[in-house]
Image 1: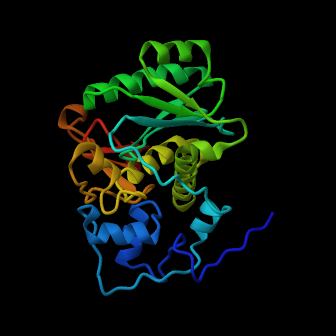
Image 2: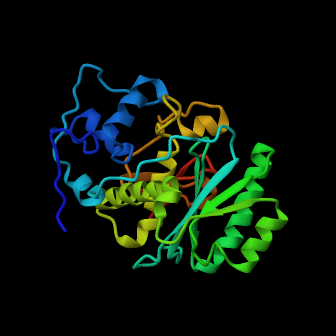
Length: 294
C-alpha cells in the first residue's frame, strides 16, 4: 500500500537544507517534529537554542520518510487525568526480528496519563510482564508516595493472566481492558508506542547502526520523549510534570556519534592510552553519564 506524503504542508517531517547548527541540534534530539522543537526554543526546556531568525526549512528528510511514514494517527481522547498515577497505560511491543545486545525481544511501556511520563523495560520473554510491572509499581509508589489507581491495557495474555489479575486485585488496582481488535481504546499508549518505534528507527537509520542495537535506540527515544513537549501539556514536558524541574538538554548528543571515554589512572599502566574511542548509544536515568558501545 502506498501513502501520499504532503511534504509542503506537514509539520511532521523536518529537515534542514544545509549542515548547520540547527541540523545538528535537531539530530541530537532524535528527529523531533518542528512543533515540539519550537516549544523547546520558547522555553519548554533548557539547553536548547538556535538562531531565532533562522527559518528551519521543511523538506524531504530521507531518514524521517524511512522511519516515520504511516497512516493518520489515532485521535486521543480529550479528557486527561489530573493526578499522577490515577491512570497508567501499558503496552507490549514485540517480538522483534532480532534480539537486542542484552538478548531482549520485547519492550514494555508504562505511560502515566496525567504527566505523559513514560517508562520502558526490556524483556526476553512475554511472561516477564508481571515481574516488571511489580518493579515499576514499587518504584513509582516510592517516588510519588501514592499508588496506581487504574491500569489500562489490551487483552493480551501477558496482561490478563491469573497471576497478573491476582496481583492487581491484591494491590487495589482497577484493570481496564480494551475490547478485542480496538487498540484505539488504549490510544495514548498505542500512539506513544508508535512514536517511540519511529524515533528509534530514525536513530538507527541515521547512525547506520545494526538492528541489534534497537533496545538502545528505544531507550534513547523514550529518554528524549520524556524531555520533549507533549500534547495537552502546553510548554511543560513530561519530566517536568513528574519531577517539578525543567529539564536541561545541554548534555544531549547525536545518537551514534564518536565518544572518547577517559580511562581512570587505576585502570591503566604508565604507557596505556588515557582515553578509548566508543560510540554514544544513549543515556542513563540512574547514573550521570552516557551509555557507550565499543
